[in-house]
Length: 243
Image (cartoon, rainbow, N blue to C red; front, side, top):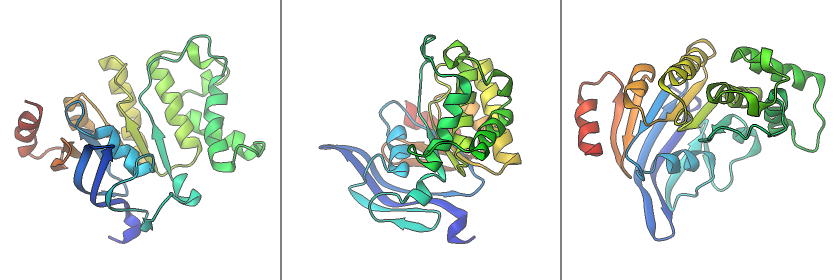
């Protein structure tokens, strides 16, 4: 495995909010093609871990490398758009004026730059992303009129429109019922296996994460477990961390 195959490399990373330490001594490699589920109790540092990867939180110690390139300060633009962050949301306001296609095209602006008008190719890439998540038939609908699961598909399409190689999703199914959650996880599984997109997702439903992810990272400010979702030791670790 080459350094380019390790898309995220975190060595001895610690992160703090003021005097409050959120993560201690984190050592994690995410390999190209991984489908990683991150779990842990409330306040364990799950979201902080994602924010450290995308540069929204600066580590106080340790080193971060993306796609084999060490990050000294800010993530360079040519690397930043190879990552896409999908934050936790609640349902979008029904009166929000943007159409579905407008939201997805924002992913192209992220790649091309806000000051540049979208070209025909950009608009085609946005529609391709909608087709990939099976939401192209909703392209002209206001996004606020969609169900929670449909809105999440649109946000995933926005990330895909930027041609990101790694999707980082933060509790993105927290507002969905179990049926919608399974539908979105099936979509992510398809993207991971068929389009070789690396996925790192924070989740609260451990059984769902174990069912779809090939790897589980359980954290509680430190790494308590990092291994196969089928490892028989996983349940023992989860019980210890969560209780």
